[in-house]
Length: 386
Length: 178
Ligand SMILES: NC(=O)c1ccc[n+]([C@@H]2O[C@H](COP(=O)([O-])OP(=O)(O)OC[C@H]3O[C@@H](n4cnc5c(N)ncnc54)[C@H](O)[C@@H]3O)[C@@H](O)[C@H]2O)c1
Ligand SMILES: [Zn+2]
Ligand SMILES: [Zn+2]
Image (cartoon, rainbow over all chains, first blue to last red; front, side, top):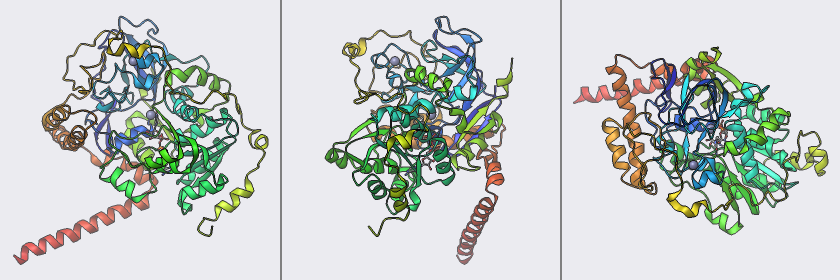
């Protein structure tokens, strides 16, 4: 079958000779992929920032597909069902799944205890081949996959498997109270959704910070918020203090993660060398621009090594930090409702629809932010099969 | 205050102090607002399950038919796991070594990062062995660069060629003078 094949940092190709996935466990299903996004998290793999990313692996954790085969213990799905597949692989039985911490399952990732299994996300997240392929193995098929509701656009459905729940959870973890000023760092797909969702929780003011003008322009329209370019500021922290009446924001959201720009030292030790768990510039700004007693919500992804953050200020300001991988399954009922009722319109963020064959160009365009790229979706030609 | 960039002045003036005015056009504004949304997810949701420690009821075990390295912070592999790209070659040896140490140590992560880099070279060798000359130009998606950033692309190529030429000339001269 055709699938993406990782060859090393900044090198991927579409490979026709990949083996078909097989049922390995009674609760597995095999899915024929119909849509598969490239996520900002994939860029961390693509840039070589996640340890134990092996050459020959297939990425992809944000996808929809049609069930073509089920294991003997799969009861919630049948052949022919068209499903959205949450990016977390979760057993539904362990103490963490029982608390709806589906991103923290203890029975899906042998290689690391600090993160649950994720499709196509290195061996540090379980060593699964992912959905940037014609077919993919979906473990614990009774738990994650959810049938796409009648009438929902596939392009909306695919975004419900990662970016929408992640943005929503970023706002939710901020504990937003009515009238709060919420600052979102990052105007990528996740930051855009976080800004949009902050309003649902009753935010009084939403401010987005990035340094790419076309993205700032997009989020200003799409999320009806303020958006500013940090390159035009002497110091983003002072800028935010001043515009929030000198006290700081009520809630700051890190939707950037380990590829953050804006500080030469962080970029050197976190992205170029890399000696730390990534460049923590946005998180640093978030901690320093939130008010005392405020909340910092982190959905940006960092590597497993230490990152440079002003932890002393967290103590001295009494900041609450909340963070996690999105618990997609937990949020789907709410978010399906928001999409079906028109309150959220995720597909509007898709800027590129790319055949799976052109996966290398897709990665480059998204990574280098060419052609005003916001969100690329890969479509295998087998998606059109009957 | 002189050191603050110009746009700030505009902001103070632009912001409508009345929340209702600012939010009236936003679909679904406040629909999920909840006074009790703090503390919030992922706060502890007590149900006693964690007190069973590792004795919780588990799904059946996926048969272990490839080499799976597991974190020493757990007693064995998980009930399911991915079977992509098992460890092999020199990078595989380094990965096996790394998994003797916990996720809490540099002795775990640094060898994995080094193994990843070695693995890239192994990948090229493996491609050649299978009679496939990797098209690095295509793998880097440079067709897209040519399409959307032609000037920058030409500049980069020119700079690379110039630097290579200078370095080559210097090396060549040195050899000659010996
Ligand atoms: N927790 C989760 O479940 C989850 C899920 C999906 C994605 N993520 C993470 O969310 C992050 C964003 O994902 P994305 O798809 O939007 O990626 P993206 O790369 O498209 O967007 C990141 C944006 O941040 C901007 N940026 C860089 N440095 C900045 C800084 N110092 N301050 C403000 N903005 C800055 C970039 O210009 C870019 O527009 C990534 O780290 C990704 O791994 C987390
Ligand atoms: Zn993702
Ligand atoms: Zn679990």
